[in-house]
Image (cartoon, rainbow, N blue to C red; front, side, top):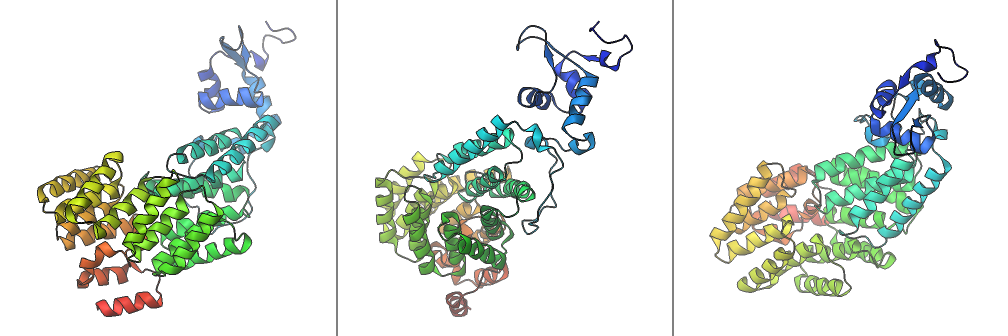
Length: 440
């Protein structure tokens, strides 16, 4: 018997495993172990830290009551166990009182969480497709340590948006997760400028709320003109508006402000391809690679520009070499299929098309635009238009350039595409209206 307690004391309800402790608290074993290690929840070890554990129900209940009302702890303190809140809208920016006790977070955990956020922000200065997973890992670890760290949620949201935009993860999956992370951030601190930037990106890529995205980007740039993520986002919105020169100017500004990141220069290169400056785009690709930067977007832009410049055999050779280095990059494979088709290698084009459409049936295809490229090369424009629409509906980065994309030129003489572009509701500009008028 434990000294000082009578036989009938409630403390005699002894729990002898992590599983029984978790069951008593209505949590997972992982959660209660973390509460013990980080917040001092009263669990005892029989023979050192690695030995068997036990706890008393009354101690556990008293510990929870001391930290905050049990009713307030119904929402788990660990973010990966919290129920999803699908009713969140980035427009619902308001201060929120968290219904958990932040005193449960130790000062050591807070400090470490802040350090991880700072480290992720530093690594973002050299953003590339290679270091993006590591950046996301820092943000997730920061959230695990301190679920009240709003900057970590915002950073996670921006990283997930980048993964979707770059085609590293299905855009639909990435954007849904990004919205959830953004929702948690604004519930903690609705005034974070970067939260409004993330909201702008989601409005542009996912909701296709052009006016809302424009307002958000301009709001964040007014607060911080040097925010490269807002600069690049506004540049992409210019691309959707058909204002390619304005887009290029912003991407160059972003590259000057963040010279070690590959994002701004790659998008500048894409904007020059969209403007028809194919030789210059290829020259830019060489310069960017000379600095040690690379990635699937850069490879895809090189392939698309090579299609417009190289002769048939050279373009096939060049794009095959790129695809060998990045066999899972959808747009790169689509460009290769296009090159096969226009080079008379229809069988190889069709084999690649079948491979990619089979992946699409299994929900593995990330970019329908890639399939459309092959179909355009095979002169099957009607089917290509179907995949272009899927690309737009799925939130593809590439779909922002459909108004200007030179490889879509064969479709512009078809009434279906001009009607398709009008129905999708791209933001209008004077150039766009002139182009649509000439097509009609």
